[in-house]
Length: 310
Length: 321
Image (cartoon, rainbow over all chains, first blue to last red):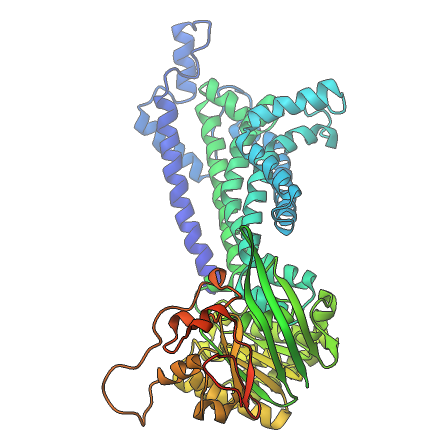
């Protein structure tokens, strides 16, 4: 019951948050200079007026806003000016599977590889391998995806010719590897550093000494007593990590020419395709809020002290 | 003897060498006996016990000998020490809030001891854990098994930790400041549990405390530690009645007494316990704070000498018997 009311409360806050985000995005995109029909070629004024009427852009901005919210409440994300024959919902349905697969794969790899590296470094504290792992991790934190991705392409795509340089092809694994790695790398590094620090802190905790005093084998001390406590900061970091992967995907999809949401987002922004940009903003915001809620629930499950009441 | 420690030395690497925190400790515990070890923080009393069980901090250099039930503990591989810890030798630490694993239910933390050492099934282990909580008079024991440490009071947590150490019926229980963080009434109840344990189960007990009062009620023999060495050891009654070492005398004099003269400040030992890095092996470590120090105290390390039956003192000012 308590859990249900917690989730409902969070859902209410989430709706409000999304409304604020939609409002801000709605007015900011319209505030940006230019409009959807300002192409290189000047349009005939009559054609332009016709187009603006079709999309309702001839109306005062307040009315446009009200209409947009009304349609949104009914689940309609409206039309796209870039792809006149397809609605925003349809475009998102097209791009989402690609982005979702890459994003989730990157998160999974970042968590698994990051924690493994962090645990390894902590257990070899102050030995050369620790310095090596942490050195690489520092580099990973410092290098943004738009540097890593072209470098990886150059190395594995061009020099070694092991993997395709760009594109989605048939969606087979070969096409995933480089985008996922570029997306995951900065998060692997961040999670590795966090895990190492948390492991070292937990290893010196009193309850770990108690566990050892009980004569538990070291494996059990680590797996049952140290890890569940050391994983907490990593779980907290997953929220920001998800945000990082989302923003990273916009860049990475562009670099690897993947037909995902990120590319639609960039295209939409360049073409002043208000509907498309807003639709993807709403999706990103919802995903971020939902995943953060999951992170908080996981946190409560892992740390009984954060659960309220009995 | 159940446990016989001789010449135990514990040192940690430090800049330009090492710092010794235990400097040649000899002590013995007979089966069913209670040995009290007293001393200020940093005197090496906890380090002595942690070191022989392989629980000293990373980088610790342990030398000397500690024979438990015929087996040498110093240099014993961790895998074999693990088999002893929690099974033949129980350990209880001072309960700060962090002494029990925060994310594990009490029942699981208790049961795993029996699962690991006895290969007990989780169900059987739980039943035994419940029984042990009953023995230690924890209210609503069945309910406690499903709770987390933060849901228990300090006194209850301490009893859980004691229960954990006793599950495998150890021959020796080492309790390191077991009552320090607790209210006096809870303290008394826990000390009563120890007394019962000693009387009924025949468990030998090493009670480490900075509090002479705690040790006085329970210990058969008392060893007083200062700067990594035992400066005086004697049967408890004798130590409290006729302390011989100036440090022991100072400790006893600084205890408040109900039958003492009312009013006036409590006598205190002047100065501070020494920094382990500054203790030299020449001269008595207590000499700088000692009221009766003589030149020899600064130059020669006093050796423990018998001053009575089972009463040994390391002090130049005390004439051996």
